[in-house]
Length: 80
Image (cartoon, rainbow, N blue to C red):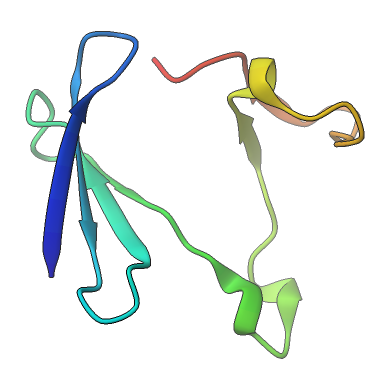
C-alpha cells in the first residue's frame, strides 16, 4: 500500500493508505490516535448492497442539496 497525508481542518494529521494499482483509499490513520483505524469502504461493486448500510453521515455541512439523509440518522457537520 502507498500513503499520502494532509493536515485536516481540525489541525490533525490525516494519513490515507491506498492501493498503488487502482488508487482506492483503504483506510485512514490519525497519528495522534494510532489505535483507531478508520475504514473507508466503497461497496459499489457488490452484488448484494444490503451487506453495508450507512449508520452515520459525516461532513453534512458539505453535502449537495439533492442528497437526503434518512430521518433519525446520526450525523456530524464536520469531522472531529
